[in-house]
Image (cartoon, protein in one colour):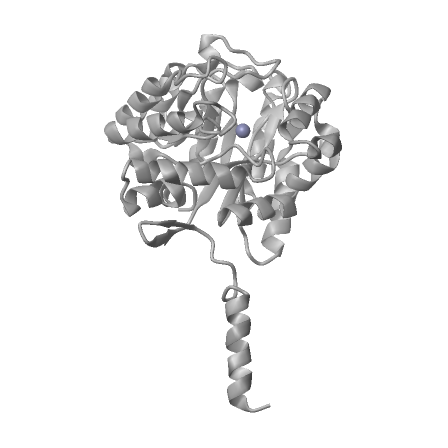
Amino acid sequence: MPRRIILLLLLLLLLVSGCGPQQLGVLYDEGLIEVVDIHLHTGEWETTPERGKETLVEFFPFPIGLQAEQAVDGILSRAGLLGELDRAGIRRGVVLAVYAPKVFGIASNELVIELLREDAASGDSRLFGMASLRFDRWGAGWQAQLSELDRALDEPNMVGIKLAPPHQHFRMDDPRLNALAELSASHQAPIYVHTGPSPFPGTRNEIPYIDPAYIETLLASHPDTRFVLGHMGYDFLAENLGFLATCIALAQAYPNVYLEPSALGARARESGRDNMKAVLLAARDGGVLDRVIYGSDGPQRPGFLDAYLEDTVAVMEELEFSAAEATAVLSGTFEEIYLN
Ligand SMILES: [Zn+2]
């Protein structure tokens, strides 16, 4: 075959295949912005308690709900997560370990580490992790929990610590958190804290478990530890902005405080888009937009990551965020505090 024809065929092939490796990112203001989702879950059907299984079945639309078991093991596996990230155009995701045996069950540090190693072995690391520990092993087992967390944080790509006071049943002013703040600083692994009330059965929704004002002493006394206030104080019970004002005030007062707007903007909530608009506007007006780090709380159900990102970007456009502001939220601030 003449060389010219071969070149032409190659060119056609390139055009058809979308020019080599998939371009990941979102188009914003005529440029492509890379995206990181810092709030993803993994897990196994077997270790999910009955109550959690019932919730998961409801998450999946008919007829997927009929095969919830396969759907969970599918969407929450590495291939499933990467598939959902690809669909959304998201380059990297952070997968959280969960130790909430009385609420959601357990997604152990080991499970997350296995996922990260599998991902790294592929030669293209797209998944990072946050480790956690068992607050129900308070007492004799606590020191062992701390050493195990310390070890988990030595793992390459394990970049943070995830805590959920209402789901793990500890107060935000619990003195045990001091040891965690020190561990966090020594590993440069920010602490992600769930803030605001939660609707799941088995949750502790008393004020000291959900109001970020209760974590202020800890933030103030550990300036070298970075804290990410998850859900920006959103009240998932009453479906309102909850402790948003407190979260903004803490970010204004302390340079080691960051904010994350996951779940509150979901399409499943009637006010999802208004919520996202309200929290991003509050952050910008409060001068702390560069502290906001994007997360969705997925994958939940097929297409959720894609929808959450699409809606978030639409809100940013509506608020006329500059490309630099959008980049900071979607990946810049994450890179700065988790990867440096
Ligand atoms: Zn979550």
